[in-house]
Amino acid sequence: MKLIEEVTEGVTILEPFGRLDSTTARELIDRLLALLQAGRSAIVVDLKSIAYITSAGFHALLVANQAAAERQGKLALCGVNGDVMRLFEIGAFLDLFLICPNQQDAIGKLRQP
Image (cartoon, rainbow, N blue to C red; front, side, top):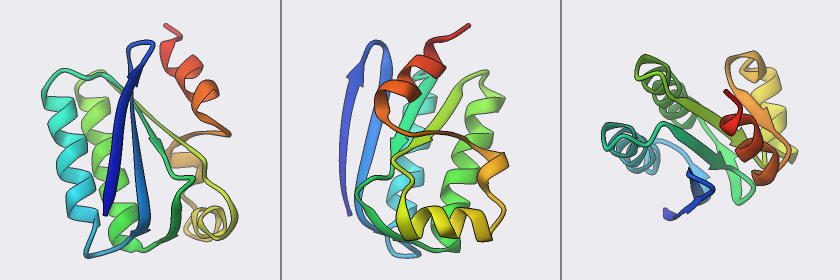
């Protein structure tokens, strides 16, 4: 899986590409946990380039969300569209994450005190 990482306004943005499944979820969770351990307390995961997500992908996001909360950090998701949004709805994951329509909105939410 390809991961693009950048920092905007003090917020780390991680954008994975392709499928978020049992093959690729480990790479994502490893990177998210490394960012949190390095002191990055505001992270946006932009899912606009994810075509499909499995339970392993949801697990990776849940672990990262919990790890962020334990470190008094914040994790937001954005770009959750189409089939991926439908899977979030079916799995009842919408209430478990801060989900924003786009990167700018997510950055704004994470920068609020």
